Length: 171
Image (cartoon, rainbow, N blue to C red; front, side):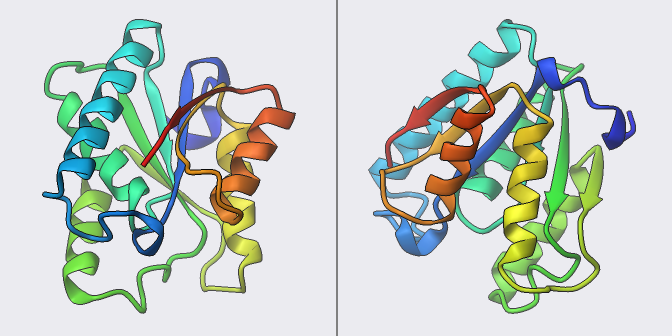
């Protein structure tokens, strides 16, 4: 499926905090992260059972990459689900640690498609554009959100304004 032909009514997007704002930081073996992943997996299954079959992920460090991994693992059971990357720019991983770059690259190879909004980083506006693209092409949002001001809050607020159903997972 061409990412430009998404069925908004059957599409889920994700938003959530970056690693530095998560209580477990990058330690995904922390019991809080493990519990969050269990909750995420349950919400993904619920969405699939409700007819959602397409997922849009911004592929940022933190919650986004966890979401991509979870959806990709669920494809083993639910063969008809698809996941697309909505990238703010082709070089978003440029300043990341090598391990994060490798994780990101492996996930990109498993996506069903990519929509990249800018060739190179052009300021924080490209992240805002990416987030709005995901919201504008979805009807359900799953958010890892603790109420703190920032990109996640503005994306959740935009989704509310656009009338999306929103599932909030507390970190």
